[in-house]
Amino acid sequence: MHLPAPDFWEFTLPHFRTCLLTDDGSLITNRLAKLLSERGWQVVVLSFPQSIVSDTGGDRLPLPQGVNRIELTDLSEQQLQQKLVAISETYGAIGAFIHLHPEHQVCDAKSEKSILKYVFLLAKHLKRSLNQAALTGRSSFLCVAHLDGEFGLGTIIDFSAISGGLFGLTKTLNLEWEKVFCRAIDLSPEFNPETSAHFIIAELHDPNSLISEVGYNSQGRVTLVSEIASLP
Image (cartoon, rainbow, N blue to C red; front, side, top):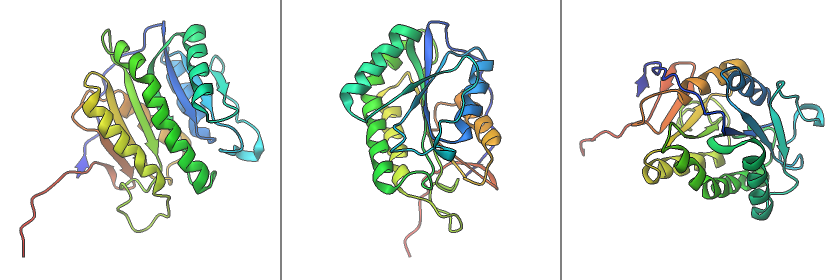
């Protein structure tokens, strides 16, 4: 179903709250971190091991001034817990989480599955922080994938279906975390980093909490709805 552009709810994170943004190895990370930082958000970028996600040219792409990076050396739960504690103590409790899932061209299927499992671990360990933040303002859990902008239902763009698991996770959390804004976004890989970042900002500020998944493709903004079909 086609959707209009979302309304824009103007809000920001309190100075003692942090937005945790995962690094997909593309310029989208830089562009999104810049837009959030310009809006006064405290942004910390969590980078996966380079053996899992390869940045362009093999080096980490630079981040905007004022945005800090935390690098993972492995995907163990123990290191994740250590990093999350360090982030909270250094920058502030996490009040928003945005996962940018790498496109399948920059990581193989095994690595992509590892990242998907890691996002489930992140949700487990962010549950308390995000739900506490929701008591005093808006807190968010967003996952951004690059299927085809049509939730994998299109027939033109080649994509990996592994990241489809993010949509199931987000819809489940949307039911369990009633006060946390949860949304999964499917961005067509045809969009450039700047456009993609602006779409994510628009969804982050959408006041409509009744929608849990949104896609963007050349035809516009869409979501999935169930319809009653008559039997033949």
